Every structure is written in C-alpha cells, then in structure tokens.
Image (cartoon, rainbow, N blue to C red):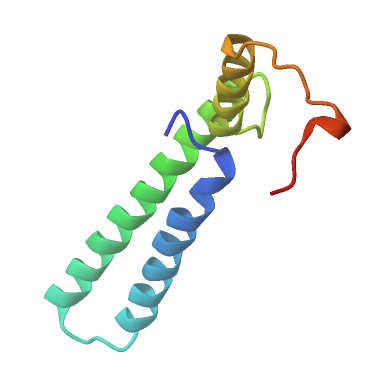
Length: 101
C-alpha cells in the first residue's frame, strides 16, 4: 500500500463499514444468543480491519511529502525523461524533401 494513492483506501473501508452496518442491522432481528455473539465478533473484526487500513493510509499520507500524489505517474515521467535522454537527436526533414508516391 505504500505505492498507492491514499484515497484508494476509501473503497475497502466503505465496504467493511457497510458490511458491519448490515450485520448489526440483522442482529436486531436475531433471537439466538450464539448467532448474536458470532455477529458481534464478525462486526468487531470488520471494524478492526477498517481501522488498520485507515491508520496505514494516514501514516502513508503523513510520510509522503507530496501528499496525494501517486507513485505511478512519477515513475512514468521519470521513464519518459530517461528515454528522451537516451534517444539521439534526429534532424527534422525539410518540407520539400518528402516524396509523394
């Protein structure tokens, strides 16, 4: 996750929070004690996973000096610069030298 945009964590966090909401919603209808305990355990694991993802995103965001910049465009820019440096300078042909066949 260190090479990912910090905003990309919104998807798994929202998924975990949505699942935990629906589990808690379904627990209101359940009367069996064992099933309620299982539901609360599942919700606690989902909330813990969302908290871990959020905390890693916050730490990743604070460590990056650029903030919301992604790593992939930076790498692509650097590769483009390297390719331009390695290419020999090519002279552009003049207008009249191109032949039409």
